[in-house]
Each structure stands twice: as C-alpha cells, then as structure tokens.
Length: 187
Image 1 (tube, rainbow, N blue to C red):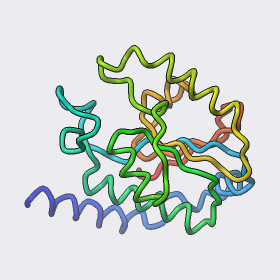
Image 2: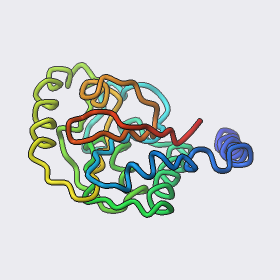
Image 3: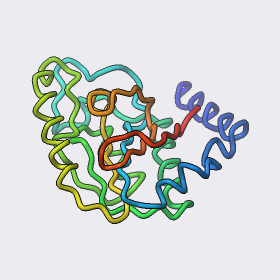
C-alpha cells in the first residue's frame, strides 16, 4: 500500500511540475499530421528488466507488466494522439502483455503482430534476424494513407532503427525507416 501511495504522489508531482511536458512540440505533431509515417512506440513503463525466468507469453501474470506509472504513461500517449487529432490507419502490437496493454489503453483497437515480439530473452534471441526481416518486408509492402503505429520493445526498435529508446517513447520514421523525430512521454 505504501508503494502504491508513493507512486500516486510521484505522478501527481510530475503533473504539477511538468503539466504540458512536450506536446507543445508542434514540429513532431505537424510531421505526424502529414500522414504516411511509421510510428514506433516502446511499450509504456513496466518496472524491471526482461521477464521472469519461466514466463509464459499467453499468461500476463507471469510477465513484467505495466505499473501505475506505465498505465498513466499509456493514457498520456492516448491524449497526445487524441488532443492533436492524429489519424491512424492501424495499430500493431507485440504479443507481450505490456505492449498489448499500452496499445489497448492508448489506442483501444489494435492487432498483434509477432514480428514486433521481444527477442531479449535467450529463448527468443535466435528470432531477431527473421523477425526483423519479416517486419521490413511488411513495411515495404505497406500502403499508408495516414499513419501506422507499432508498439514494441527496446530490442526491436534498436535492431531496426539503431537508436535507443525510453519506455513510452514515440519514434517517427518515413517508410524508408529514416528517423524524422521523436517524443518522450515521461521526463
């Protein structure tokens, strides 16, 4: 209970000192509003590193999940897209629960796409090259009118774009995967 109250206080303090944080960044908003962008979002904050040793992909209770800060961060992402009237063609998410929860809170409607799954854990490490190949082929074949959102993991974004990301960070690229902008959702 003490930790829960502490987390609530931290969120409250965050909003007092950083009320508009960075959605006043009109350049990234204008960029996304042009459409035809790929938007990569690292899942919202889920404390820890990796997953428990014997986690089961189909059982969220065995995985590292969003905490109250991650849930609020997902709501911040939702407000960013809604308040700026950013149009989305589709949202695709990793099958990991922290990604699906980020997608569900921030966008409501999403589909899972296993090419976005983590390969951080040693039992999935051999999947990296095949997943990235499938993801690149998917992107190559895409027809984008508005924007496509991919909610995934640090390792996938790093492998694909060669950049580090924070939890909940938004990375905007063109179809050629050139990074055009980025936005942090927590300081």
